Amino acid sequence: MTTLSHPNPPLVAILRGLNPAEAVDVAKVLYNAGFRALEVPLNRPGAIEAIAAIVQLNLPDTLVGGGTMLTVAHVEAVHAAGGRLFVSPNCVPAVIRRAVELGMYCAPGVATPSEAFAALDAGAHALKIFPAESVGHGGVKALKSVLPAGTPVLPVGGVSPDTMAAWVKAGATGFGIGGNLYTPGVTLDQLKERAESFVATWRALAV
Image 1 (cartoon, helix red, strand yellow):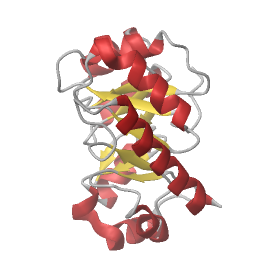
Image 2 (cartoon, one colour):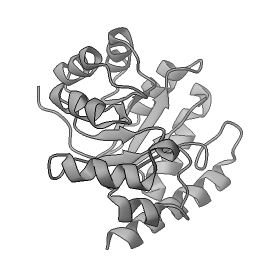
Image 3 (cartoon, rainbow, N blue to C red):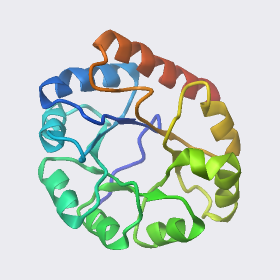
Image 4 (cartoon, rainbow, N blue to C red):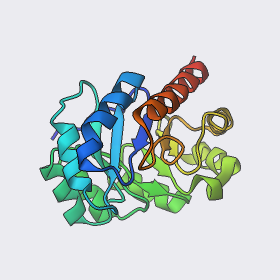
């Protein structure tokens, strides 16, 4: 099955704790601000329902899927809901391979070269560097020096507009953005302001 292309801009909105009733409005705000990848982590109630609601919007050129996907059952549940983005905090080759088989865009979590190459061998399309604070700029730079050229590398954990430039200098090619973008209870106006700040910062760095 043909896989989906890397999102542009390569910013993944991590919507942990998203209420299915709010999913459509949140997704529209993020889409209009420029986000093209929306991840709903599965370790909160209502995640599958929220994914399904967002999928029904048919947002152009947008990857929608799940995060904290730890098992093959998670992969199959997200795929059944229409999700085509696989994100995990860890590297489990069998789970990655199943997501690849289903044509999902795969960004598993890695923190070491061994995990990174195991993920790529299993078919991963991008690498989520997690937890980014622990790996650090030096770790990302060293990892990039041995990865195949062109491998997308997305730090996740504590990313803010103010910290993006240092990560890009270290070799980041995108980001997963969680609590500094979305938390349950954030207003749509606050979300719009935060999302636009991230996208504007990325566009300035990517020039």
